[in-house]
Amino acid sequence: MLEVRDIHTYYGDSHVLQGVSLRMEKGQVVGILGRNGMGKTTLIRSIIGFTPPRRGQVRFKERDITAWPSNRAVALGLGLVPQGRRVFPSLTVLENLAVAAKGNGGRWTIARVMDLFPRLGERAGSRAGKLSGGEQQMLAIARALVTNPELLLMDEPTEGLAPLLVREVGRVIERLKAEGLSILLVEQNLPLALRVADRVHILSRGQIVHSSSPAELMANDGVKSRYLGVA
Amino acid sequence: MDFWISQLFNGVSYGALLFLLAGGLSLIFGMMRIVNMTHGSYYLLGGYVALTVIWRGGNFVLAVLLGALAIAAVGIGEWNAFLKRLSGQELGQVLTTMGFALIFQDLALLIWGGDPYTIPVPAVLSGAYTVGQLYFPVYRIFIVAVAALVAVVLWLVLERTRIGAMMRATVDDPEMARGVGINVYLISMAVFALGATLAALAGAVAGGFVGVYPGADFEILPYAFVVVIVGGMGSLKGALIGSLMVGLLDNFGKALFPELSYFTLFAPMAAILAVRPTGLFGRA
Ligand SMILES: Nc1ncnc2c1ncn2[C@@H]1O[C@H](COP(=O)(O)OP(=O)(O)O)[C@@H](O)[C@H]1O
Ligand SMILES: [Mg+2]
Image (cartoon, rainbow over all chains, first blue to last red; front, side, top):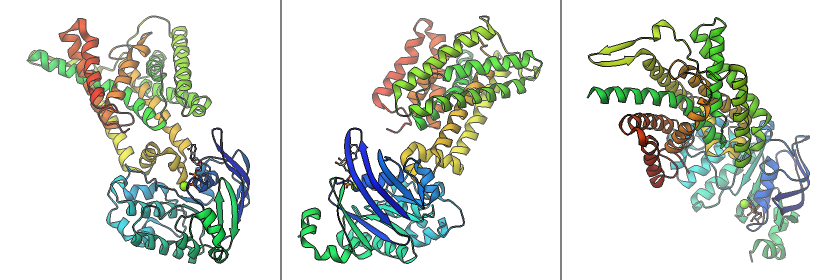
């Protein structure tokens, strides 16, 4: 489904991703872990095409999408829940969904995501910039879903949320997984990542330094303390 | 009293013309962050193309429409060949669009010569209503009506359609707009074409009012920029209010203090920018 082959991504002269490779199969949830500033968001940006890698390849559904504009990658079936939510603040909740909705007869329609997040239905006419952080996160997830992605990229969807909302986001991710959606999940919340992921990779200074099943990582205190700062 | 009413009317009708010109410039500025120095040329060329259509026997409506459409094509060409490669590079944009403005200026001189012309307006639009001592030219009322119609249609498109929401999403966050699948490339091209069309429409309509003449492009461009900067980039409401303000200030300034007319125009602008650097309705 997704194959990242030895990508090198730069911001100007700064060489951030230094040869990252990973593969994902359909229906898998893959967790990307690592401390702040290690390149997780840059990996997401490289895949969606915001910051295309200078070397290496991103392949999705057997196509080389490395240099594609992001909207083309989304048309092919990538969906993005970006770090920091990035809802369109001057658009209403409904408009945020309408501009993204593909209407391709896929599973997720605007009505369906409003069932999933009833709060969005209640606030359909409000400007997205006026929503609370939790509501914005729901909207960011819903907005990605209405593009009916086959692979969802989620960059720290629980960042800055109250514990109750973290649990709700966790439940949504589990439900999406149960429905067979493939998810590449960047997450700092280790228990959540370990619970939902089929496989985890740890990024450190722009390289993958550890790949395993969640259970193996759970048992490996050395790796956890060295790269994730947990005892 | 009569003096005030007729100056008010003149100011509003000039503001209406400015709105046609600056509305598009503001969208281009706000959405694509392109500082488009060619905008005045679209205005000039729109007038000249309309004039040519009339010389060839076309009627007024056809002339105005063909002027607007021809310049839309020029705008699309310019954007596709050059500007889309220069996104984010202000200096490159200013130099490129300034270069085009100079080229168009010379081309216009070559094709249409140095004489000023007035586009003949149809009989229904000529003449004036008189109320007591007051005198309201029909053509100026027509310009206000055209601008009002354009404002309403633009507002409906921007605020009430999915395409309009996509345009606003692109203003909010162009990268993320792509990230939800919006074809920002097409949207940008459409906005650019729309802006060029409106500028040409303004030029064609102005041809029956202030005329078409060499130098009209660079004469009106500063006004359009003042409107955009005062109103706030990318804001339709800002362009509307800004146009009316500039139209009125310019008119009253010239009528009351002819030797200070630039001062009466630019001093209030400076004051507004000092208080609101993003303009009246602009976002940072
Ligand atoms: N736009 C940018 N310009 C320059 N450097 C950046 C930019 N974004 C991120 N970086 C740098 O790239 C590195 C990786 O950042 P990022 O991918 O955001 O990390 P993470 O998501 O793992 O916290 C950091 O050192 C960060 O400072
Ligand atoms: Mg990050």
